[in-house]
Image (cartoon, helix red, strand yellow):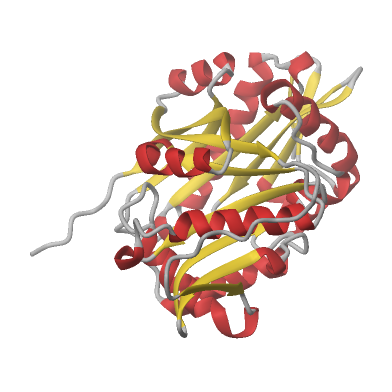
Length: 333
């Protein structure tokens, strides 16, 4: 049931709202990120993916005279490590803090409901992402008791026209091949779990749990192109992975790298750079005009140097704000 304040209404989204919400997302993206684009179809897919209930997990803010000016999404898809996520997008021409507060109120209420179904024991937190330059959102989150816990930088490279591509220099004994969904996901999981252990937000999962997570992701997003998932191998052993898409945000000219990781024993041998260089060469051959990825600022020293070595430069920063909803319960000795 919608709530009403002043001249706007907060109500659950409907699939018929997808075009209007895409317009809000695109206006927000243009204001804060430069050229991010979202299609009506992408909005629909986002609302229809596994684990999302459009009635309970979305809200739109509708101004009587102008239509939809903002939207919010709640996600508990990170339930396995008890982090709940709220996302709010406001049209920059109508970024009224009163409307944002109302959407934040709804996310707080939705998180409180989700908290009831999370088993006792783990710490539970609610988080939001905010652009570093979005002073209004940052102030609203601090006002509600959120604190910054993490920063990420978007790296970007504009690609020249496809031409004769130089093959990356591979370390001795290392080869790069494509990933096969039917047989390689356990190896991908093993590399990623080892490479990112100790990173912010890392979650230890069994191979079965992690492979199931990859399968759900691939099923939910038809835009994922496994032809640009690359594996670095020593014989039959997978020692590094580079997972990306050549249709980022549905745009066939934009590529994105989700994950670049190398097993501990094979680090500092040039494998990460070889994988990324190989991926960029493949993206160029497919006609992509740019490649993006996100880097954890806690891992700046080596990571940024690696990305800069292939021509990538920082574009913008996002900050993760978090508020604890329930402390972890101590286990008796």
